Image (tube, rainbow, N blue to C red):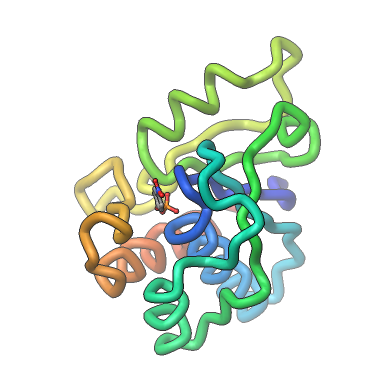
Length: 149
Ligand code: 4NP
């Protein structure tokens, strides 16, 4: 079972912290014991809490992102996690390039767990400003991921 899961986006302040929090809450409701974390491919926000508008939108749905702090994904993460889940195809490509030759964690697109949403991308609300729309997609993908564990 893939019980150590890392969620990865670009900045680690919007999509992947939300994915971590939503999966954490849904997993607890299902009685699943998972080890979860999130990280970004970019350096800009390392050490920062999730973006305030993202935190507010998440809190309105009962997800608390306040304790999270941004970090960059590292080659060591491929040994620490069973599954690394990318928020969009650019993130996936970056992860494939940093993957150690020995393999390690499986790689997947988050949107692949919710084929009904009709996209391969969790839209980045840092740019779209549609935080609720992103949370809708994150919730659909989270449910699909947990169904497959
Ligand atoms: P995220 O959104 O990848 O969902 O955390 C972003 C937040 C900030 C930046 C990029 C993406 N940025 O370039 O600052």
